[in-house]
Length: 428
Ligand code: PLP
Image 1: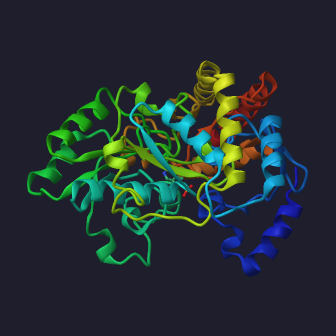
Image 2: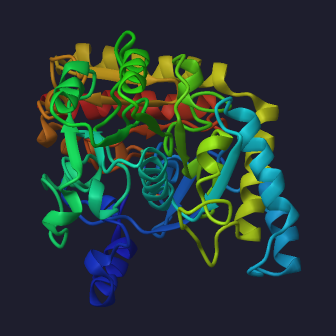
């Protein structure tokens, strides 16, 4: 396997692109080497410009839940393209996608489409402030909610990968209303409320996916919601990653908690740029043109993206792959644990349905601090051996791996062999 063409494109890309990437999570900063350039993908497989084929466990960081280039999605998008790309006016498909999303989330009467997860969350936060009339927001360390100023503190994903505490260019004033708590630790939330009656709500990934996968323990989410309501604050679920991935709908229902405001992205666009935020009527009626909270977008509800979202979610509902996800997820978890044991490597595997990843640590991982006990050098060795053996992984210890319904028995065998070789290499 060689990466000559990727290397060449990388060097060329450095001239006019920052680090030759358009999102830092795509850089190979923490695993070494240069990012791979992709030529195409189909189903469960992705191909780089050198012609190397991989089983894809990145899936565009989640959206490609039914695999790449599903024929029904292609057909729907091609059909939409024939009518025009953007009108600056409403289309019927926006109503259709809104119906699918609201039906899937019991707590959502209305939804507003935006263009990314970042936009969904920044709007959701604005809405919580508008509704409660309060200013402060609590976030959990290790959770990532997009790159809006106010939440770029103690964040996971690329910030965790690059070991950055926050971002330069974010003024103090932008984060002065952001409070930090510890995932799975209700007391750390309560502490903030003790001397503060200006807290609008808590934003949480109902299952953490940006510090690696971290699962809410016991009744953490339920107790959190009860507590917040007793204080007149809102629960904002950032389901950009978990929405339609954990079940048809969100992780909230599976975990028995209904959030006040839900933010979505990734899967709802099926690979096209779509984000959304939604809530019950009384909250959504704050949003312009019904209410005084302003939020807008030239390309919001874009007809091509709506066609991608509708066809993806319709196919996803028909396939109902959630049991398959659990079974395949369990298989991969077992593959990882058995190979680690065989080669004497200490790992912890966290998994929630079709999201999983190994941490190279012997401790349990229930929050960001514990995730950071992982040996990222071992991960880097593991990562490259997986690549060389045909499995495309996110180039970071702190990103979740994703499954699609297009995964096959043959893919699982590729993963099994690659994991064995990679654990062997880590052990050397
Ligand atoms: N929220 C969560 C939980 C995410 O995982 C992400 C992206 O990974 C975002 C928000 C930001 O979404 P986007 O990258 O589409 O702006």
